[in-house]
Each structure stands twice: as structure tokens, then as C-alpha cells.
Amino acid sequence: MIYANSTLQILSRRCLKTRRSHETGLDTDRAQAHQRPGCKGMIRFSDVTKRYPGGYEALSQINFHLAPGEFAFLTGHSGAGKSTLLKLIALLERSTRGQVLINGQNLAKVGHRGIPYLRRHIGIIFQDHRLLFDRTVFDNVALPLVIAGYRHLDITRRVRAALDKVGLLDKEKLYPITLSGGEQQRVGIARAVINKPPVLLADEPTGNLDPDLSREIMALFEQFNQVGVSVLIASHDLALIERLQRRTLVLRAGQLIADGVPRTEGH
Ligand SMILES: Nc1ncnc2c1ncn2[C@@H]1O[C@H](COP(=O)(O)OP(=O)(O)OP(=O)(O)O)[C@@H](O)[C@H]1O
Ligand SMILES: [Mg+2]
Image (cartoon, rainbow, N blue to C red; front, side, top):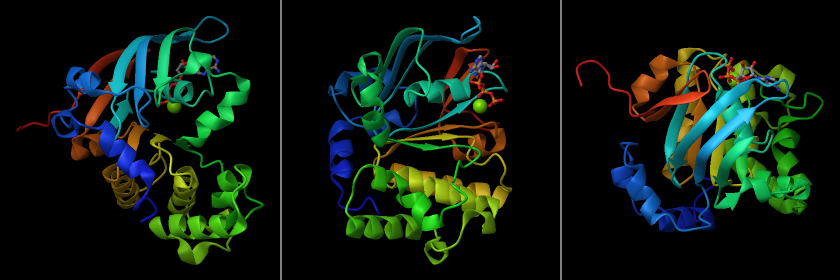
């Protein structure tokens, strides 16, 4: 377990006094009351609007709070604004109005030079993997640590632990092109968690995978969440969302129209 004994785990537990009651996803006010400023793993949107150049309003006055260690889905039709919302968290885009707080930090105050530091604390998994095809699996996963200036020995140890976690330890010397879609996705997940980020974002992580692989990938996200990582997953996959019975934020044409645990028939 790459998160075992990590300070991250301790930090998240300390911040997360209301986790149990919060699992319904409907008890955000109480969680906010217990939220300590600066806690790792929190996401808060206050009246956030995103208008793209050209005038299109992709998100309109979005309000929600994800407490440290929470797990939530983000769903809605194509074009509803899911990717835009994730991009605002990682500062791949900036909000037009309103406030985005991540790990207690107001993103409006993060300048160009602060962006790499912010991203070190957020793991991002893209639908199209964004792997480097001229580098081995090992080198792809190592990249964030190489950029952050880690020692060779630490890099080797942590990459192996991450690859072990996603079940790809025996593939470290291979190039991504020789892997299946699900394996490539798992390399992307290993790379996203290698820095032990308190927040993990995934944009349609099971988009191209069959149901068995989707289940495997979701189980991985749940494992990270169990050790205190906040997880936010954009997904179209309503069957999967319904099965997992987790908090779900629903966007429609840029508006947040629902926030709670989906109710299946018979419940
Ligand atoms: N860079 C951009 N410039 C202008 N408009 C954009 C840009 N990126 C996204 N949009 C528009 O914003 C809206 C929301 O896009 P976004 O990618 O967030 O939707 P989505 O919910 O992720 O959709 P999908 O399920 O298809 O991935 C869309 O109408 C899209 O055309
Ligand atoms: Mg999208």
C-alpha cells in the first residue's frame, strides 16, 4: 500500500471529523462547520462561473463542498461542464467569477509560478491517458517525481510501490503501446497517485473500458479513498454510478441541479 503510514493519512483523518455522517453526501453544512482552514483534500466552489472566450458560459454559479476524504461522482450530459469543473480545480482553466478553494488555498491567488506546486497536490487522470509513448511504463509513472527533483532511489521505490498497487509491476519495462486500454489507464492512475496527492480527479476514467475493467478501476479509486484521499470522478456511466451509491453532483447545461446519493428503485 503506497499510502500506508503516510502523513497524508493522518492529516486527512484529523481534518475529517464528520466523515461518517457525511457519507450520505447530504450533510455538507456540518462538514463545513468542522472544516479546519488549510486542510488537505478539500474542494470548495462558491458561486463559480466559467465563461470561455467567445462568451459561452460553461458553468453558472456553482456551489458545493467536498470534505477531505470524500468520494463523489460528477455527472451530466455531454457538454454539461464536467471537464470544465475539473479543469478549474487543477488550474487548467480559471474561473470567471466566484471562488475556488482547494486544500484551503484560494486559486485566484495562485500565480503562474504557483501552479506546479498546486498540481503536485492534485492527481489527475485523463480519459485519453496522456501517456508518453516513447517512454517505458516506469518512466511514465516516475515523471512527476523526476520533475519534483526526487532522488533516484526514492523514485525507484515509489514507482514500484505505485505499479504494484495497480497490478502492473511486471510491466515496468514495457512501452505503453504494448499495453491494453485498461492497463494504460492503470499506468495513468499510478502516475496520478505517485506524489500521494490528497485530491484525486478523474475525467471519464472508465470511458473506453469494458464493465469488468471499469469495476477494477473503480475499486482502485475506492482503495485510495479508504486511506483518506478525496476523489472526484466525472463519468457518464450511470449504471456504475448507481451501483456504487456514492454522492453524485449532477450538472445540466452548466448548472448544478442535484447533489446527493442516487436512489435506486426499491430503496
Ligand atoms: N476551450 C473552450 N472554449 C470554448 N468553449 C469550450 C471550451 N471548452 C469547453 N467548452 C464548451 O463548454 C461546454 C462544457 O464543456 P465540457 O468539456 O466541460 O463538458 P463535459 O460535460 O465534460 O462534456 P463531455 O461529457 O462531452 O466530456 C461545452 O459546450 C463546450 O463546447
Ligand atoms: Mg468532458
